[in-house]
Length: 496
Ligand SMILES: NC(=O)C1=CN([C@@H]2O[C@H](COP(=O)(O)OP(=O)(O)OC[C@H]3O[C@@H](n4cnc5c(N)ncnc54)[C@H](OP(=O)(O)O)[C@@H]3O)[C@@H](O)[C@H]2O)[C@@H](O)CC1
Ligand SMILES: Nc1ncnc2c1ncn2[C@@H]1O[C@H](COP(=O)(O)OP(=O)(O)O)[C@@H](O)[C@H]1O
Image (cartoon, rainbow, N blue to C red; front, side, top):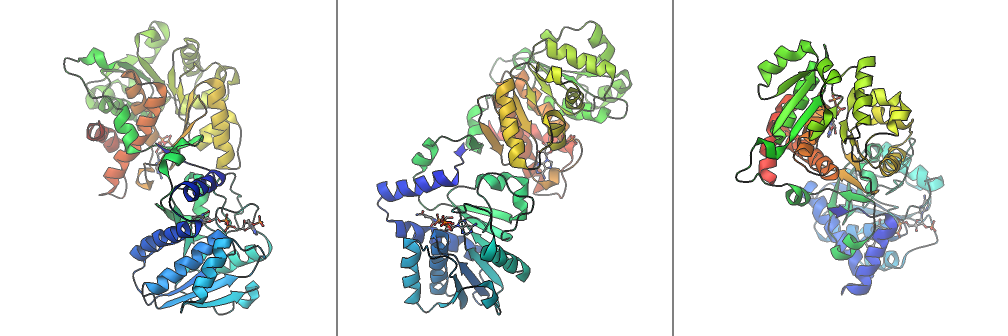
């Protein structure tokens, strides 16, 4: 798992590298510039394109100067550097690189105001104005410049972070910084790249290594962690010789209604392909034929029967919610399950019913997993006007209620009872179709039945769900939920 650091912590990692590795500050900047240029030239190999490099006065600007120098030396014929004389405070390495640039044949001009920028002719812009040193919102000349660059409507590559974009913390809805096509950032992605608002600042990003000490970075205290394939490989347990269906647990999925039986089928199918030993779908009688014809391995339990006689404790894992529908009976059933004090997976309509019952939210059994998307989350815990605030609330509630909160999105945030936030980086827009969340619930309950901890079940399920979607999306524009559910077993096999 990769630790994601704040700007202050990243600066410490820079300082640590300078103090402990045989590398001087200016050489670290040169290394960062080289890594940037390597990645940039992979995308933009036409040496005749006009490139305008905008440089501020701090280390981000210093990077920009070194980048311009390297581009000139690498055969780019039309590089022009705009040095923004907006601050008297120039960093030491900025000044060293300015001198190096002065001694080169790179074309440059010093700009004191945006009004002086009349004739910028560029196919590509490199934004090295402000980086992770941003410490207040953009205003005055900087805001004007960002607006000017955006209005040029050119392809913008940002160095480390787009000017005006906070690397962590709340992103303003009225973002007024540079809008980049791509950000090439150093050593680690910025925490805020995983928040949906970052789409206002950069269409995509790439992380390039600059030789910082990985051991040092991984030792830092942080709440934000990025799940990696190696973690999944480490957590997954292979199926054992002499094992039988009892070894892999019995999952119960309380789901489906007259018009939403599909949700029950999708969740059950996903659970089946995740490897639970036995699966029972607790469904309305109207869904019986559909279940028996499409998923013969899954047992059916009519809903009223469960309400009357079944003992929840006989199941190793229980999920409630997909396509359930909202009714007094279903609310009673939810209440009964919650009061049984067995950990649950709570999704969809079960979350919507919970939103109306704050008394029950407080009693969600410890180690349960709730899987809200943004709207379900806000119904449960109040409206939020930014994703940063939403994730901070999720972290708080996960700690308070001692549950796992899977806050779903392009990048899903998995908030654990110990306050850690695992960011899931798999998944893609081909998965944006109804039923995908039902599949995720099925996968989670499938892992819980197999006795994975709630934390591991949530981390595994989100990663594999997204990864399966990524594999399937290489060949199709959209990945439907039923196909993904079936393919989960293949991805688990690949990573176990
Ligand atoms: N060895 C290293 O450290 C390496 C660093 N690297 C590079 O350094 C970058 C960070 O550089 P940095 O810390 O110098 O800050 P940077 O972003 O250039 O800002 C400069 C100054 O601007 C100011 N300022 C802030 N907000 C403002 C605003 N809204 N409006 C106006 N002014 C504002 C603020 O000054 P202040 O306001 O405090 O006087 C700030 O100090 C990082 O992104 C990466 O590119 C790489 O080379 C790898 C090695
Ligand atoms: N653009 C996307 N990138 C990655 N994952 C996505 C994307 N769109 C949807 N998903 C995933 O699909 C699931 C959708 O869940 P949800 O909204 O509850 O769907 P439904 O209610 O239709 O089953 C989530 O796990 C989410 O992470």
